[in-house]
Image (cartoon, rainbow, N blue to C red; front, side, top):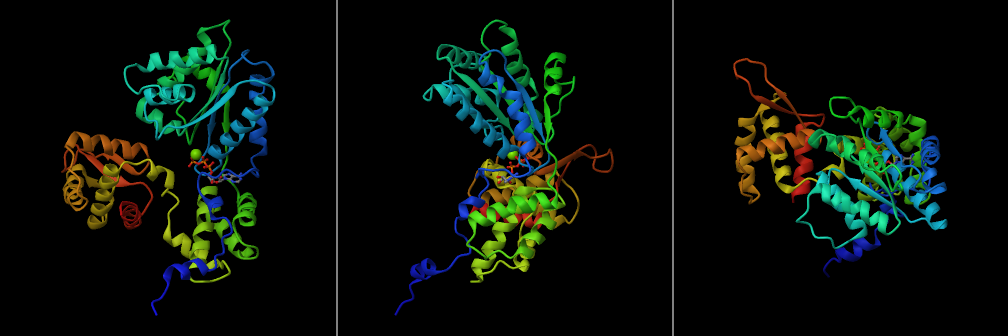
Length: 397
Ligand SMILES: Nc1ncnc2c1ncn2[C@@H]1O[C@H](COP(=O)(O)OP(=O)(O)OP(=O)(O)O)[C@@H](O)[C@H]1O
Ligand SMILES: [Mg+2]
């Protein structure tokens, strides 16, 4: 008799009850330890609903990785829209990830398409598109709460004009209803007079909300919520949870904590264990790095991944802290061949290196005027070369 592998898999027991609740874009109903932040937002934005059109709000949310910025803004925007709808106010929320909508044009187009889904992609300037957004809002008596997530990445690439445009837009029309409010979200958003005019600057500086790293106890409460909903009862040992919180509290990063929990669960499943023991958390820690963020890699084009793979490989081979552009390209060509891609020219590669740098995946610096002359040196941020290589190999298959 042949072995039935499918039946085998299907009858396999799992420690998970609802594994999808551990995925990165899942936003739980309650967000422990972020009540004060949610309350601050509600207080600041309530006028959008209590007296629609009277004012618009501009807010900045800043904080280290995995501190709940995205989750909180999503949950908050959701509650705003619900409250508005109950009162017959046509408030929309739009969450834009600026790593995906990488230019002002693409951001404005996303905004317009929220109301005109089939609006063609070409033929208009960014300014025209933005103007059309305002017109649609006016014509249809709508309001928009715009969330520009990963805005720091966007500003590093494109400058801060978008903030100026969006802020000035509503200031310009004094007596017209104010229809657009904005929340900019990022790790560290550069707000200074070198990139912003004084009035935009002072508006934004008054409205900055900072998220702090989670302490171990906070991470425990956050994880406990996921354990109760995503895992079968009594599968995750309390000691395992404690250990994960201790590991992740070094960075105060809830995403990393959740990833460790998920991986520890996977480990239990793959060894047919009904208990998630602390050792699985240790194994999980060894298998992943907090800088390997899924959503960053998901937005990365294949060609850029190949270039990153070349950097990782060359750095592994060299065993040094940095490689040169030349060394990078030397490794890039055979990798393209391996993956059946046409290698791109130097100028394009240069741009991608800048882009990977802005993503925080590569670290670049100018060499001192030494034996190599003036050249750009490329290193990795935090992730060990071998781990990055493995991660990319998994993604590229
Ligand atoms: N207070 C919380 N309660 C429950 N889950 C949380 C909480 N804070 C964060 N999380 C979860 O942790 C993960 C990371 O949170 P989030 O994506 O909001 O972080 P972030 O601050 O946006 O990080 P980044 O700077 O990397 O974008 C998400 O899965 C989120 O649902
Ligand atoms: Mg985020």
